[in-house]
Amino acid sequence: MLWFLVAMLITLLGGILLFTYTNESIITQIINTGFDTLRSQLISALILAIGAALIGSMFTRRKLGAIVGSTIIFCLYYLLPFIQFETQPVYDAGNHLRPLDPNALVHTSTVMIALSILCAFVGAAIGTALYEAVLEQPFLLIRASRRRIATPARGQQDSADETTRITAVPRSRSIFSSAMRWAGLAVLIVMVIFATQSTDLFFLSPDTSIHQAPQTGTIDGIAANGTLKRVTMVSHILGNKRRSFDIYLPPTYNITTKRYPTMYLLHGSPGLITDWASGGKATESANTLIGLGQTAEMIMVFPDGNGSGKLIPSEWGNSGNGKQLMETYVASELVHYVDQHYRTVPKASYRAIGGLSMGGFGAANIAIHHPDVFGNVIALGGYFTAYAEADRVWGSNISYLNYNSPLDEIKVDPLADKLHFFLGAATQDQPYYKYTIQFANQLKAEHISYALTTEPGHHSWKVWADQLYRSLLWIKWGPTHVPPQIVQR
Image (cartoon, rainbow, N blue to C red; front, side):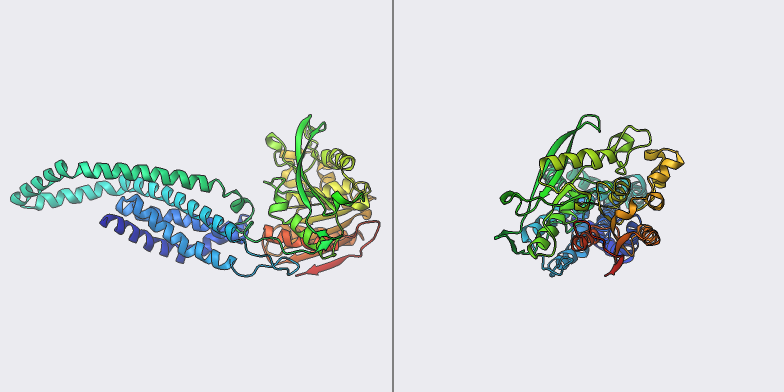
């Protein structure tokens, strides 16, 4: 028990020093790699939990005390401030209150604690290994030296005491140690189970599911809540493979026979078809604005842009080697399938394509190549040249690279002036902010309709959710022409 307390105390002291003097710098470095603030804070806290447990176990060789101390530090320096922050009122981009979901907060907190315990276990294991490799031999030498200095009588007494300990104590200690090992294994298994539910914390945001959708109004006498469903089709263009997409049907879809405009939203890299609904609050924003009468009812389609092999991040394009025609799949096959199976308005002026990051690039690239299919474009946190992925996706043909670079193609495509662009970026999201401003300036030079919205922030779902909300307010379906405008938050 004494060594358990010593290990926990050393871990607590080490954790306090780590969080006090290194946390902010680690968060900054993680943000610089492209993560947003919330995810960076979580990752930094878990890294420091490893460090704290490592310190405690390295100097005491007591894993349990180090794990407990590290978990306490994680809760004090990260989890409690996180809970305090999330229990404050949260509003969407339209200043509508998003109620707290207490059950989701408890679940998220439990998952975070499980992650911290696993990280502490890793740190404690590393610390114990370092103790055995670095500190154990010096400690043994010190102990041997002390024994040589001791008197023979004292040495005999110590030997007798040691014999007594060896013959009497280990049996009870062995039983206790065995029980502790089994208990530790059980706890570890439970923590792993909880930790497997942490995907959204890292790929979307730690607060993704903690707040519910705002209370909305009604439309045609029913609640303004659309439905989201999974659809699977066979893509002949992509090698007769089964491709899934999610589709949002507006509130009145099942009680009327009218047709609706359609918005296609492309995920980033890495990304999933569920990202826009969960991280980007796309369906939530649509429900809210439809209920308030501030946007028209629409169908939303969330396709899968993941390819295969080296082309898993597909850039939503047709690869230079012709083996993966993702652009053709979206602009031709998918649009045709949706128009056949759902009550859409099959005109370019009633279709929009949007995306974030890689999806923002893909949306601009596809729309410029197919202005007869898509009339409206939403590019958030995107980039507008193909050169970054030249070797992997596009090949080395310069003309093909230029063709797949919206910044270049917008200058030469005679039909591009039919498009209406909504561009969004966060001021601290470099280099994407710079790319977006550059592309907006090019649109202005070409006299192409666009809107530009910027706000403080990083490459994050918070920014993209807010800006998608504003794009739903901006979009005007039909053959209209909106003059260029700049919207700053």
